[in-house]
Length: 288
Image (cartoon, rainbow, N blue to C red; front, side, top):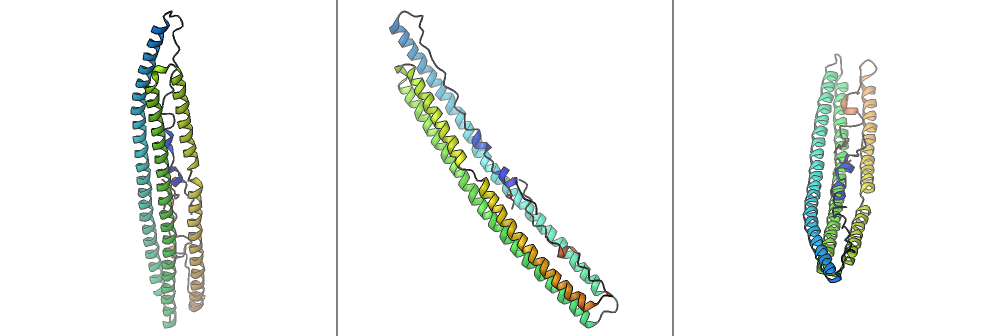
């Protein structure tokens, strides 16, 4: 069973990464030291600062809105990709199981057609067929349960992760908006207002990055994948044990003169259930 790293990619944080650094650095404004009229210079400088802050605020709001929209679209696409990947895997699994079942039935039919079989031997073949189909069904049920549990837990983790990031970005937006409003209201106070604005923006950025780093789900997804794979491995092992026992019983009933090869698809250690999630849902990778 292949380990899937796609799920991890599918819920990558690229959407949020775009948000950090959205606010452009606020330029500094030096007072014109060559002007002799202090009152006029101060008034002109204050006006320039106010105009600059308003311009920056307008540009920032437009840029941030665009990036937040991109993040939301990215989140939606990732969820869509995970769902599509899981659907594709379900189709492959169903097809693999159908093929295995058909091949098995064909081999059983050929075995029954062997000349010279006694009634007891035919009964043994039918018992073998029933036993194997039961083992196949048991394995499929266990594997499907493991995959379903994985998908449910993955969906919950992804939803929680995206909600946390959305909340962090909303907090960031509010902090930046408040910083610009305060700066605009006090722009007549001189260039010191710019220093305050820069500091506030820097703090908001740091807080956003901290929130982003704290909300990593990579380890959680890896744990979910490990749990799923362990359950599937156990189901395959149980199937192999049952298949070997059934084959041994059939071989004894048929004797050495009749081939009892069970190398058909029905006795393979896997049944097409590897969630080769390729989307790094993994699936999970998220796969599925």
